[in-house]
Image (cartoon, rainbow, N blue to C red; front, top):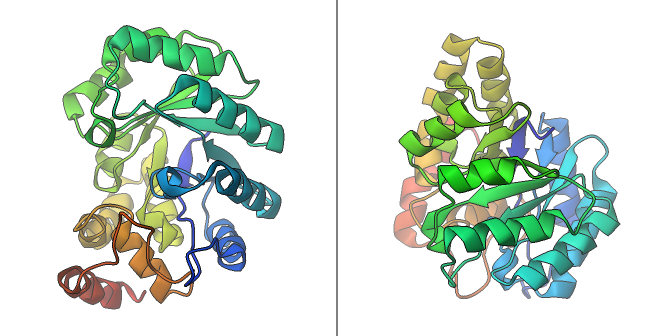
Length: 289
């Protein structure tokens, strides 16, 4: 359903910090023209944590309105179950194809709490839900047993796995029921995970090079691993550099250079440092970005 290349798109801001609607619409076009199958607005890369509720809904409205081909997997998570339900209902009412729901951050729920959180959201909306497991940001991990329980709930369609725990992800791939999608949440692990049976990626790097990421993913999913491996090798320096500082600081800088917004995130995130620019600029030059 959400297999292939998904892009965790940035939310472009103007110099005054407001949402840059023109840049966002052009970014949607750029993604669709270069092979992105799925667009993911208002995720962690889209700075959902610093968007007001009104802004969050407005970003979803813009992306859903502008997209002509790609499916929209709308970020709609919260550390409050009731707020996540409200955002999810709002996204579904706007016509999103699915919901990407981050695990509750800061509160550190038990595994039973995680199960009931996702179950409650899934039962509140009439569109597919993808679990977003990123313990480095949330402070809690959706373990394999809990995820397999969730996979049995109608409406829970898959997981974006950004734990970085290869043993855990392999266990998920081995135990998942038919039709439950596993999407890489880490660009550098996309190729190895697809080789192990994963269905695609929700990518940060695809913001600036959707064509190359799409080509890599398409070849990997078709079994053309030699071509996919070559592209992976070409992009690996970028995959690494985009996390030289907290995401989305580096990718906002790159997209600003490309003309999508002012290139800076909202506080408490800060503009990319001089040291970060020294890391990224030569890689962009090598890639022709």
